[in-house]
Image (spheres, rainbow, N blue to C red):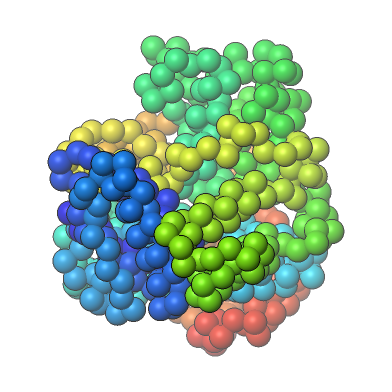
Length: 470
């Protein structure tokens, strides 16, 4: 089986390759193609993957997937069985600019939420649509697994050209369900039925069923249990009891928006700037052959892997640091730093489709039930939602979930309306639709601010030059 990763020079590619190395079943991926616009980043990640393969051979794995690299997109797509899209249009410099411009206006600049997510979506949609059209032409039988952020929005844009053959993934709901199940002492978390519903980075865990009994209410019994895991510390026991559900961690940006914006404004540097600088050091070290921070020789066997793993640990420990500081949640628990994220979701999805191994995963798919009708009544059938799905050789099929009501339904409908404005702007080049997207977002409270945001982003990102029509 052949897998192509778009954004193959990206820092997290070794996570995917590590999962492939551990897959010993028949029909596994035997050839991996890495595509990226930056040949230096491709070369660096290829070195890390060679170190991984060498480590695997030492442990008895003799048939690691063959790896090729290319800067030719059409070449990367031809012959692919699966295409894993993990591109970052504008790079981390673009993400840092998204954060900086938004914070200067007193609004959130996070890459998937609020103004920053809109800016990222506006410059990503045209590229994602071009990729979808190329896949349809060059690899019509391939399945596209999208992890490009904003994941739900980008998946919806690609689905207009690929239909059900594009599926969005995110590790955030998986991590949330795992932490809650572990907190409640569920012996086999994988066997529990999860009632999780919403949009990407905007969902709630509303039920956790073991032997058809919902054990989630037991989570709210006492403060010690409720604040013993990441989301409990982040949101606080009182607020979780008020909701009666456990929100995705990204909802902290909505429920505690002022505190989050203040924390980001007061931070030494934003998350995007931190990752930009950290990864620049990593890639430079591999290019020059010496780690400037430690003086270690990067040419020795295994050095590329060591440098990557050290950088990864630092990256994970700093995840959502500003939010934890604003909430007084302290450092991330060791259990929350463990592996088992999006790379395993992607592998499980590929296995289910390629081998017809039925499994249940939380995925970003169209809001259409297999037998007809909508999964979420508050949205139309073409809207991409994030819900549990039964996956087999025919694709991902959404399962029944509890319906959103009250503020949850309102928030999901409002954010989906914003996403539709972003899609309209991306397709038509309309500045009016782009301004509307910013202005209608719940975390942007002014049309005038929306107009200034768009002009600021157009000045910072050449890729937004297509927004010319009024």
